[in-house]
Length: 74
Image (cartoon, rainbow, N blue to C red):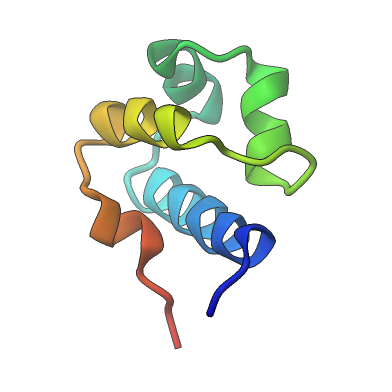
């Protein structure tokens, strides 16, 4: 079973990869999802857990589903 910290790390890494692959700006995604840049950066760098409701907002902005965010690479 995957714990919350590990799960969040997978989600955060996938979000960062999507942003990079699409040549987007983290600050723009943060704003559209309703977060400050500092808050979003803390989520993506493991200093703050990403809550389920926040994942929904991020998925909406990125146009992806939960499977995309939780897919473990390698």
